Every structure is written in structure tokens, then in C-alpha cells.
Image 1: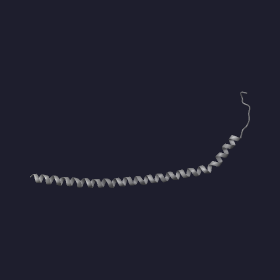
Image 2: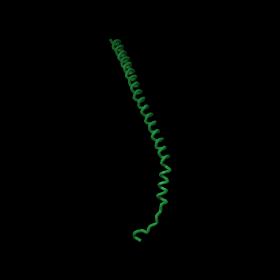
Image 3: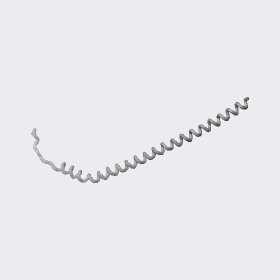
Image 4: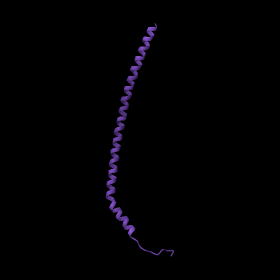
Length: 86
């Protein structure tokens, strides 16, 4: 009787271990799927960010000279006037 109990216990432990390994494999598969898709999203976001930064730099290069000319024109255009309280 004790031998049968011991054998049943060993069989139950084997089944538990097999089930644990099966569930662990399923979990790892789902984890790889989720993390893999997150990696794709991250790469896409990084590429999109690089594109936006590149576009901003291009707009800055195009607008730099006209903006500087406008600012210098405003600063250099000095009109001496007598203050109203003088």
C-alpha cells in the first residue's frame, strides 16, 4: 500500500512538472510575441522621430537666413524720436 502511494505521488509529481513545462513554454511564446511586437513599434517610433527631426533641421536651414535678415532689419532700423515726457 505504501509503495502504491509513493508511486502515485511520483506520477502526480511527473504530471505536475510536465504541465508546468507546457505552461512555461506557452508563456514564453506569448511573451516573445508581445515583446517582439513592442520592439517593432519601438523601431517604428524611432524611425518616425528621426524623420521628424530631419525635417525640422531642413526647415530651420531654409528659414534661417530670412529670419536673420528680418531681425537685423528691425534692429538696425533706428528712428530717433523725442520721448513724449521730455
